[in-house]
Length: 406
Image (cartoon, rainbow, N blue to C red; front, side, top):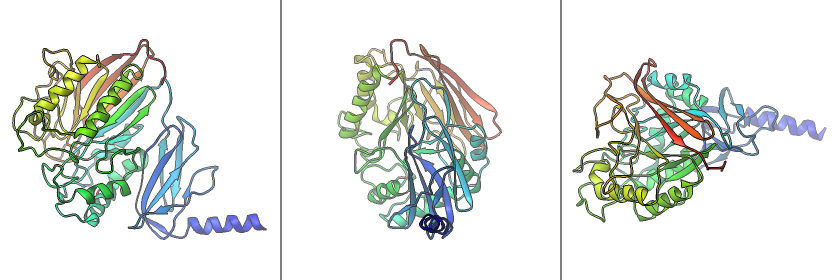
């Protein structure tokens, strides 16, 4: 009788409310994941062959579900009220996988998000400008409203229910246009990101840089707004896009990964390649760019590929135009994917393997296939529009000989 009462109580709890926005999933590892949603009342998450999972609530009432003790490289489907979702836990050791990425979205119901879902990616990586609210006041409610507006669009919601979200901001979704560490809305942005976005461990209370691993591939997500020196500052040794603490973390991550991971994806919300000068991307921080390139050269770091956005185009470079070390010796491949639902233009360049500037509404996204062959990891980039028409293509090989499974 007691067991029956407990089962009835669980069933009532599952059905006690409804989902208004979401669900969306993220922070996936080989054994865990996090699901979030805006609900009215208490709705429990259901996984097959497992007890229902009760939510915890933020101060604004956002529901969070923490899923633990999962099996690696396993597809999980879940129910949340009358809505469902799925995710695959990450593999360990040698593994091949696909992910999609892009940037610059305005919250429209554009079919590019359905096109991305149709590629069946392991995850969806958003590199910034998830919305263009340009919030300049320190009000968390404005950030919550902007995120829920984007997540509530049907095509975007479909993608989020079929692939976990990995996300780092750029200027328009962090603060005003070209925003930096002086943004008046900085604290609210930091607060709501932690509330709404399933993320990996954050080591800095005032920034969102983080890392995760899929198989033998390391992803380093850098936050290029929270500690950024204003763009108008003199481009000297003191001017920094990362800030001292993040830069130290980033360089140590690269050293730790050098002989352990055959491939490191560096997620940079702004582009790397461009002639030094006044700019909102790395060309405007050319001294720091040279410092990083010299570090790559000095320590023999040749396993890094940059993923970037913001440029409102798709583009690819095999590293020949991205070598900013003194005397050369540190080529950095760059894959750019933007914009998801904005008009086109171009930032930075040149790019060795093409650049495509879309027409307004064309909807661009990047697909990356990672094939781990044991002694080599093959990276294939497809820059596509929402009709799956390929506009830019690049294939890179990263040597993996002598590197054991992490």
